[in-house]
Amino acid sequence: MTRTLELPNGETVTSDDVFLYNGYPYRVAFPGGDEAPRNEDAEYEFWLSPLHWGGGEMDIPFRDREALVEQWGPESRGTLTAQEWEDWLTEARHDDRFGGDELDALARELPTAGGGGGGLVARIRRALGR
Image (spheres, rainbow, N blue to C red):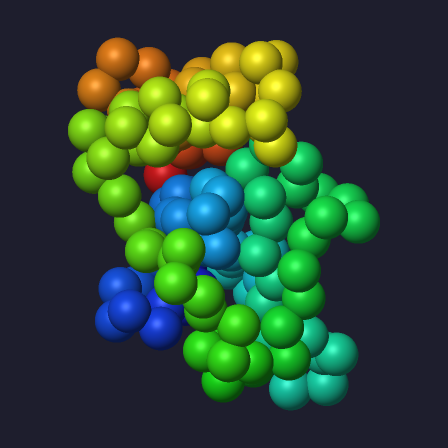
């Protein structure tokens, strides 16, 4: 059974879903992977991994959902439609915090009308029939 996370806005996401957390696209990751049962002894219940910079020091660990609720800021919206991701990319291209290469990579990964279709991980899983 694939593990899920209920976001503070009420949406439920898996590690395939991209959502806006504090103004940046993220995915959720679970200790042991998506299919592993929850480990009560794990230091963290889950972590949020930035779509472009994830898989390392930029990941944000959470001990539980309540900790996420506490940090869910006004720039957090959860999942977005393809058009909303397109709009986010357009706005981000005018924001000095983001580099062109980073945004080009995000455009390939975001589930936009003209692009990524859910990102590399989602495309691989679809190809494998999962």
